[in-house]
Length: 500
Image 1 (spheres, rainbow, N blue to C red):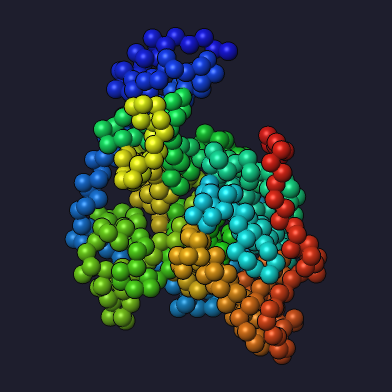
Image 2: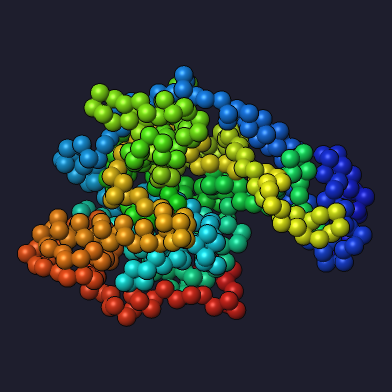
């Protein structure tokens, strides 16, 4: 057990105005003192002071409208899938499959979130929206990777692999690991799956004082999906990418059930354009839709929140009737490994800091833990898209919303971005796949296993000229309904895994 010199500890904290963290020191037992000391030792106090000052200064900047400083993505930097020639899309796809077959493609999955808002006590990736197969988000995405590796082999004759880097949080890394182990990594090679943990930042009150969550524990929150860049270095992920020869990364969040994981069309487009950074976007559904817009501000690409521009600007239209600022951000990005290395070595410390005023549980003066009724402090986050401005070559791809974006954020009571809408969206898309392949479907309840078809390809021989009455579940020959139904085994709480 470490011998603690509380005077040295207090002197260090006092230098940065954080001595309140020792307020209950005299009431703590030795074990709790050791834990509080560990929490304090983890704090980079000079950096945190800079963070607070920089973040709170940005609060006033966020209220400034950007109307006179923004421009839409130029047509030369944007490919719109709905208007692109089919031959060009096939060319992009072939390029993407070539890169996959060479082992140059990886996936960066942001999966640190809990399913709290869904009423689910586990990592969100383990959630099942109620499909006939009962597959979770993790399983669906894993099976898309498996199928894509197969398609790349069929196209090139060379068997490649897709590395899967999964960013978890402090609270989700262990259950996520146990879940993958219990499900035998969903058929993927476990050597090609690496879990790593995003960082956290302490919560502050409005005066810049770090808050206590318990008498002996500092209040902390994840540092946002933009924390991925620091985590890639700290957890050795960049080194792993460089060592394995992974050149291109598809980065996305876990909660989009329609995500085309490692989409070869997107990868191929970015490779052919020699882009170091890119984004998939969807056309905004209406001017006031509350989504960020990918655009140019002062000559640099960034995501502008809907609150940062006036209603007048959001309603601007081009001559074809499309919204001028229509490129809705969906947390779906491309990076080269070289670009990520550059962010790590040069730009990570320059990332913007975003502030959220929150109701943060805290220890009051009497030592009791209180949950406030109103915001009482701030959480500081970094956003994954804030590296766009550092790109030398940025491009974007507008994809059909009904084919590629359906977020899972809320419980069904919200009626939006919830399990019911996610289930409906994937069933509707799969019905569309069957009908485009020459089948006829009576009803809406359709599901196609990713192991059978990645994005509607290869269905003609199974469905052409046939009529189906829902529920319809098309699955690969290696699957059985019972296995699919039972395979997402919940992990055993008593088991502990330290690594793969």
